[in-house]
Length: 507
Ligand code: HEM
Image (cartoon, rainbow, N blue to C red; front, side, top):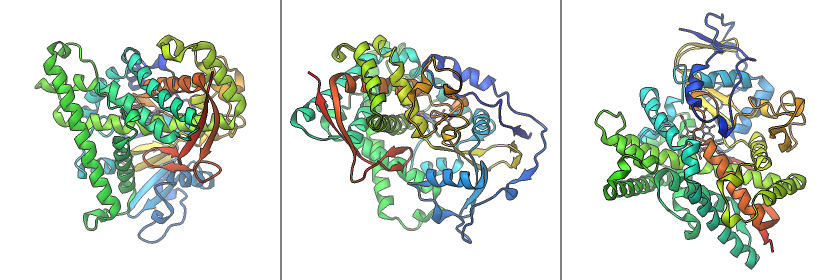
């Protein structure tokens, strides 16, 4: 069966926490933009393409660290749909926001994550967690993960999240007292790892106080390595292993050993308190209980795969979003002052921070959404067509690789007036008319049935970190190491090059 997607009515991603519940179900039911039978006017071969070289195509123009920028430049030059080639692999690139929205909604049946990424991960001995799983296995894992990340579960976890933030604060107080520069990007990664390990695995890894985020560094290496290999024109590492490949393999082993440790800890907790089998305290316990049922469809490999997935998906994304946010606030003093004022009004004593105090932090949340509009942690999403599909007016056969450029409409003046300006007010609940953000034109968390299940947690993590920072300190400087502006560095997500921060404690 062929499916056709057109622009316009196709929009409908979501960001708000309140819309989280039952959303997955609704998403699958509202794939309303398929227009079966619409004739395709063009084939992929009719699309414009940047000139490439024989055999390798555009491979030399696409560097893993800047690939998102190149795709965005090309979409301005060649239009919102064009083709490119990496070796023998042809990709179609799509930058039309509404068409992207419709494609993201046509999952799991119409599109999957590219098989090449799953193959690269398989080859490294990885187990598919919910991010890379497809079909029935994905459905089962998704249900479990959604349950673990529901607003109620995240709210129940709030005390420990605030506890992790207190450690961040303690480190920053010490640095401020000694007049030291803070390794901002490093600290935010450690914060995100500690939060996700606590929520998903019930483990207190405390990388903040240990000062060494070994897990985080290995996670970064694995993510960047899988992304790099997925882009290679041919799998050279099967014949020659470069230093980067050896580093990758070492990091895979280290992440696996951390995963085994988390699983052993959760098994021990279940053995010590059999009552937990009825009311598992975290995602990992829930998965182990499910895996112990012979017909659950969740096996030990899926459990291990999801532990790794949570570490991979939950660390860099949130920490990159926070790092960009702090940078952009520093560069926009009026927004920084307003965010600070909001925090100080609602959070009189951050040591006693409650979940309820984070709820009215609308301006802080608006700043986070605006930062992700300008600096999306996931600036492009690669997919693969599972059946013949017509997107815009182009016929895509099954197996077509479709790369979605997520920062196109979100920085287009037709969707966001003065698109280069950091203007959080567009995201406030009471923003009016043309000033109101086109919420479907910026999709930092994706859309449709595979929308990010961690979005609610990450927005809360961001609010808690910002409440800690702005209520206890005045920022005196944020610097990009060795350059006037941070560079956008693409690994698995797009983060800033290293940032440092100096703080003055408030009296
Ligand atoms: C600011 C922070 C974050 C951003 C910007 C972000 C962004 C994304 C995006 C763009 C996707 C792909 C969605 C799609 O295909 O439509 C995704 C998927 C996913 N994210 Fe996040 N994410 C963030 C935080 C988190 C956190 C904290 C977790 C929890 C550990 C998480 C877990 C996942 C998982 C498991 C998936 C795969 C879902 C599936 O395939 O069904 N993310 N995220």
